[in-house]
View (cartoon, rainbow over the protein chains, first blue to last red):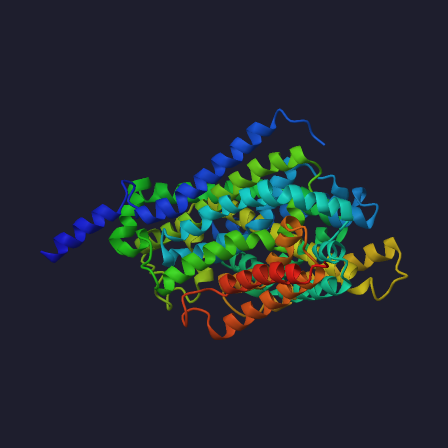
Length: 51
Length: 483
């Protein structure tokens, strides 16, 4: 019975791409949000005059 | 391809690279007319070039070989360390760079120590920070030489010490001549080559394991811990969380990187550099940590267990071995080119900064009569001496690459985070606060490293060191503010 429970809990922890949700939420999501923030800051500054 | 043919191919890559750098050095030399040009590129370097130079300096062979090799044992959780680099690149360019570059230009500061000294009107602050930089950047420079020497020795099949000496010769060629112009121009080219190399190895690793999800399943089949985040409080948890902070947030106060984002020519260029630097800081470490983790199941299919020390005596040898065994020769050649670019782009920044700091902040105040040309000559001579000295130290590696790097970054971040942040964000910042923050942060990081570092406690010295540096720099400035 225990191996089945282990396999079930592991399946819950793993995302559809086969990696732990903690890795995706704790690392990949902040990383891509950082990239999005960089693009937004750059896009908003395009109309500004340079020094 | 025969072994002889491969050897000629690898040797020709090294020779072509040396010639290309010599040309870059010569081009840079033509643009260096004053010490300002050598130190800060005359504040004329554009956003796109500086964006690429930023991540070429940030990431080196240390990541491609050392950290990636370690992540073959840590698994996919190591990608968390890499992904936070992008967040920290945004903080560097969107929050710190606009204020820092303005202050650098107003003060006409050429080095990080000079910036602190002029900003706080305290020569003592300049001397102490220059001393810390001159001593503690050395382990990091040595680690980059070790990474390049390991890669050259395994991929080309030469002795390790010869690989390290070749690395030293390459660096000496162009840092000696062109200063920041040569360094950033070379870093621009190097940044592109190393990114192409890392991404190619990353994608090919997934291809070898049959696809994105299949690769993670293959990893889980060998060890399920390699696709899960480590349990709270374990040694691996301390390592991942600690390195995420040290290599991400710690970067903000690394003098060699600060010089990259504080010397951009204008506000618009900072925004351009922001996008390039963040994209590089997202893709490069994600690719490197991922192929490091993927190397475990791939090497297992060749009968090599990365956990077995008799098969692979040092984690620093895992990636060079992985690339030579699992990949076709053209990809090994690309990897070799990437390693050379990654190592030299970081070493040149470190040598450039250390030589500049030693000349301008330690020697010039003693020999006041030194002319601008004399200063430039001395800086070039010291840059040569520093690169050769570190190269010789790397022949007998004093530790693992990631350990040497993490140690240096923790000491530098703990010393400089407080004085730098209050200089930018607190009007009442003064020399007493800055000096206290720097000395206390440095002392706390050293003491924690000696007595309380993991596995004794789960915390890396970075956390108490940086906290003490910021809090004391602020509190002492506030308490000693003139009424």
